[in-house]
Length: 257
Image (cartoon, rainbow, N blue to C red; front, side):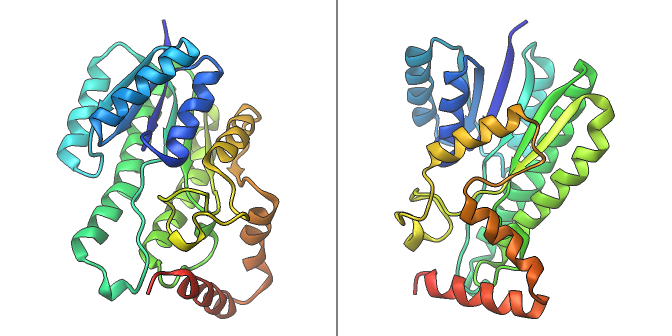
């Protein structure tokens, strides 16, 4: 039976780069994102380039009813998913009180609730199958409070801690859990647009290549880039009030006015 890697947020950025990196290794794919036309063109291109089966499903995972319908389809289908890559996320930046509440709620629904529900549903299926792998995408923003992008950083802190906890719980089931914590990438979709084209940032393709190699080694926390690993470690060296101040100053300097 063919086994599939399912990637959410697969239409751009790291999600798209992960799809290409896995297709290059001969993996059959299920791509999930909101834009059907874009997904279809990506699926056709990957199939032609790498000769793999690429299925796609247009779904807004932040909508609970649509997510429920999608999970029901997966449950009733016959396709085995042995790798789940949770890339789908919403970003926000700027003062929290200035944000539209609808956007903040959407962020929580997608970044936290949808990711957790997918892990629960597919994690159970993988445990029954006798094994599998889950990769959740957090951020180096998860390692400290993130003033001026408070909700986003907090949601990624949840993803980091949830993934590490789940990894320990699922060890005996044969299901492996890893969490990817990238820094800003050279992509228009990153949380701080003014950093999008910085030479200090890795490209989505570089992040994906590093991540696929780390998954093969079953790394728990994956942080591409030496500079990003230092940034993730550095909050341990200071007091929490100092870390808050420094993170807030950096975020405020780069957020759009």
